[in-house]
Image (cartoon, rainbow, N blue to C red; front, side):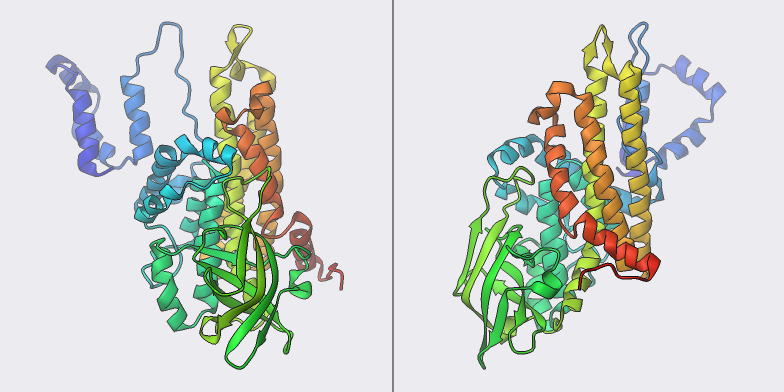
Length: 454
């Protein structure tokens, strides 16, 4: 909110104050200084102040603190412009996504109508330079991931796959011509991207055991194989496919268009988590890809790993968003739900669960905040990102479990949101590297010994 808007809001409140009251107030405080102080408040602080000033407590009833999962006020470390983006995304998620998310999650359908609305936020490709991208710090990419996942992890996954994995592959591994062709359209969400790495028979060992192959016939590349769990792939315009060259045995990346001959994407059904995400089983049968659509700077799995390293921090932030959404939903419920004549939030055992949740959440938030700072400083390593993924995905599991606990039987109903967070936390726990694989990455870094199976 602008300074003028803040002043107008305050003046609207002062209309209710008569001259005698105003004179009495002026004797106690410097009104000019107070107005200057009001101008420095952000939206959240101003709303809290207005609520405090305008709310009249009922006799014998105390005012409850606001529901806010940022207990250590990390938002105060953001610049005013960064905070504005955070609040813009939060308001969008509350106004546009929350009202429809449970219905679409239940029906396992993606709300396609939100895509042009997302485009208006101008948050796609946040950390990239040029091509219409905002070129903001990686920290803001994390903040945005948290804000989206705080309302729904599926929508966050859609956004992360498109903006992070798909656009990131082209940004890091594409030629200048490929970047110019795709990134501006993808930034505006005019073209949607997907990322095909995981396979039916190979997940964690894909770097060594990739079964999808590619072969150059002198003019085009011929791709054969399958990819599984590929988010956005049922409706994406472009899918980044990683395949092993049968001649050089090196992993290469390709920009595969949905209309390419030999490409087929089938929606995966019966998922218990991320039900809004349209995951697909991709089958490539002599799929023809021209040389011009081969990622020109991708010639080994090391290049694939660069993309994964860049986006893994975002998955840790996504876990934080899921945990925060579950915590805030549970806290809200406990303040309203009454048993034995009192809100259950007033009971010791419930407060113990809430404080355990908040403790884990706060630890996760401070970890990923520093993680993104390191990424912006250029000192982020694979093991840094892996440690955050391990810790945050484990702690998210614990938080959603406790959230479900305090809701009792209502914890399995979608209407309270917690059930959705419980299910979606299981997907976060596994993708972008399982707990075991990320643990071994960190273990190798701290001991000097690799425990990976050769």
